[in-house]
Each structure stands twice: as C-alpha cells, then as structure tokens.
Length: 142
Length: 217
Image (cartoon, rainbow over all chains, first blue to last red; front, top):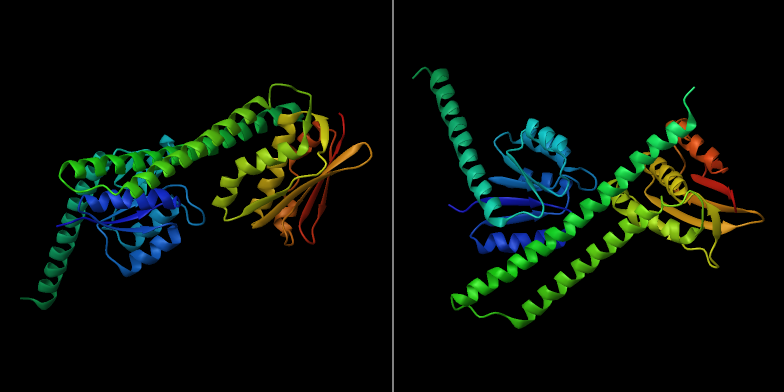
C-alpha cells in the first residue's frame, strides 16, 4: 500500500521538487504552502503522514502540530526544518511529533521515517477499531 | 538603576543572534532546494539508465533553478557578511539608504512570519550620517519589531535629510493599538536613542514612528 503524505512548507519550489521525487518513489503526495491550508486539507482528506516545516507565516509548524494532533491523534507528523534548535525539537516531540529531520535532508532517510510512521499509524487505527468493536459488544451485551 | 550600556549590550546580542538565526535559516532553505533539485537530476540519470529518455529542456530548467538558488544563497551570505562587519567601527559615516536596505532585506523573512511586508523608499540623493552603525541597525529593528508586534502588515520605511539632522520615517498604515503604544519605546529603545543622541516621535494616526538623528554624533 502506498504511503499517503501531506507535505507542508512555505518554500513552493522545495515543495514541488520534493513531492515529485516522492511520487517517483511510489508515494501519494499532496502539498500545502501554509499551515492554514494544511489544516483545511486534513479536514477533508485522511493522510498517513504529515511532513511539516517549523517556521511558516501565519500558523507556524508547532501551532499546526498542536491543532493536527488535537484533531487527529492518530496522524503521524515528521518535522522537516532548517531551524535546528534542540529546544524546538524537544518541544515538537512533547507535542506529539513522531520525528524531527533537519534540512537539507536525505530522501532515503526521510522515506524510511515515512514508512515507519505509516506502520505506526496503521497500528493506532487498528487499535482504535478494536476498541470501538469491544465497546459495541459491551454495550449490546453480546 | 540599570546601566544603559548593559541594556544596549544585552539588546545587541539578542539582535545579532536573531538576525544571524534568520539568515542561516534562509540559507538552509536555499540549500534544501538545491539538494532536492540535484536529487531529482540524480533520479533522472538513474531512470535513463533503465531506458527512460531524459527531456533536455527539463535538465536545462533544473540547472537554471539550481543556479538561481546558489545566487540566492550567495546574496544571503554577502548580506550576513555586511551585517557582521557593521559592528567593526563604533563610529562611521554611512549611507542611510544602504543601512535601511540591509535591515529591510534581513528583516524581510521575519516580517513574512508575521504575514507582514516591509517596503523601502531609498533616499535620492543619498543621505549620509556619521553614527554607530550597529546601534542604529539595532534601533531600526527595534522599531520594526514594534510594528510587527502591533500587527501592522504594510510597513514602509523612508529617510530624508534636514539641517544638521537626518530622519527615518517608519509607517504602518493603520492606527497603533493602545497596548502597543504603552510598551513603546521601552528601556532598550530609550538606551539606544540616548547612545545615538537620537529622538523618537510617535504619530498614532496613522501609525508612524519618526527617528531623528544628528548628522554626526
């Protein structure tokens, strides 16, 4: 199953090129050039992984991360940023980011992280489904 | 009482750090694009090895994109270098237009994070001033920060020359908020103004800050 990825960065040229390379590797990739646009996309579509830049105009990466995790806790977020402070990385991990990569990144390394993130999301969704079924069974008393 | 030079030193370090971090972040962005474009070229050559033809126009366009990003990064490094050297001399005769241009360019990215834009009208003829270049840059950035914190989106800077003095005018286009005016100028700006023998005037409607500096301290 191909990974469904949303790539979020305010550098449009970066978005276009990285998304083309990821599609060449069989991934299904959508792009957003702002945090606001990404949040709208997540409302309409389900993604396995969000690759998020930390510094963006308007809703920045950390703010977007908070909202995304509140909306869809199962979503896996990987931060890809040029802003390389350890403090920001720790803050992002505390907010629920799965991983943190510094720009310029190696696509092989990023692809590995995306695959891990997709597997993690599938496990969470399976667990959520199991819990739902259990709840229904308990409520109905079967 | 806090020594004003202590305030100036602390503000100077913060200003230098903020500008350097912003420039290095932008250099990283340019490098990231170069990295992806070069990676795409590599992808194409691998596909060509598997028999897929390469479109020469696409290669030409990718090479052009890489060169554009190299020029962008080079411009950023040059700016960083000019900014770093502005602390070399405590007193120097400078072209005010060039200083405003440098700060506008460096602050551009930080302004865009606030969804704001800084436009500059370069004075013609050039306005020269003998002052402390680094402290002046710090003061201009402090004023710009005030506009950004006050959520002004269209910031415009200009400069002109009078008898024995020069003026820098920064306008935001909309009225200052009462909270904004209360916090500005802070002790940092006051200390910088004193060191530069400068004066500040705030025009709340429409939001405008006028800095007046002596042509020579």
